[in-house]
Image (cartoon, rainbow, N blue to C red):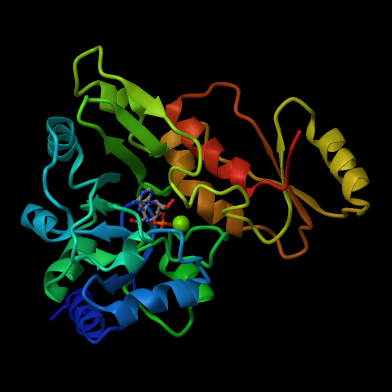
Length: 311
Ligand code: TXA
Ligand code: MG
């Protein structure tokens, strides 16, 4: 048996025994528990230090699992989204099944579901035999993990399956489709408004909701270990000078966060580069790219939350 097959089996064994396990997905690594394990679900919130009001995404490996999680009256728009984007980095809200543990949904009457593209993630779900609830595998408000080592750094005691670097690099797009055909984007991601628009007729109504509609969308999220300054219209030298003045601090070792000009590559680099800063760096800055597309908007959404200040 290959090491990977053994690791998948071991992960499933632990998940069935109510443990929390780190799993790779194409977006970021997740901290998973079986949806049938109240103990495991509670443990996710505890070790992540995540407030119970912030609901978890349920990950599935086959379409027939939906009926056990959602009160399945998926509208036509939702059906189209499923056909077009699953498996993949899109989480879709459904009305919640009455028997689904309310801790997963933080008492909301909807549940977010996603079928990951990553084969190892789907193999783990299959081997466990139940869908898995999994938030990103970082401590609450900290930078999301895109590598095995990132998860181990935050949670040294949990079992993590190594699936290599996450190929997307930012969390899934979260959407909700309504009976009247309106689609709300609750969290931006690599699947963009244009991607969604392209699979409907031109007059589909898509709304971007950048608010607490997705309770995890709080400011001060994804924070690196040193302050991050976003330089939008002020040059880095002056931005840092202003931040130093405003906070009454002196910074000795500024470091520039560099991301590729290709937004898909930049998304993949984001969380690694936010961690990969020299030991002696005491302030991080990022210059806004000159040309932007929708994926850049999703990256900037994360950077804005990670930033201590935007100048
Ligand atoms: O790519 C991803 O989605 C990753 C991987 C592991 O799948 N997971 C992830 O989970 O990013 P998490 O918990 O870090 O973020 C889930 C987001 C949160 O902002 C949460 O508030 C929102 O999804 N969410 C979950 N259920 C929801 C619901 N019923 N209504 C509104 N927002 C919901
Ligand atoms: Mg998260």
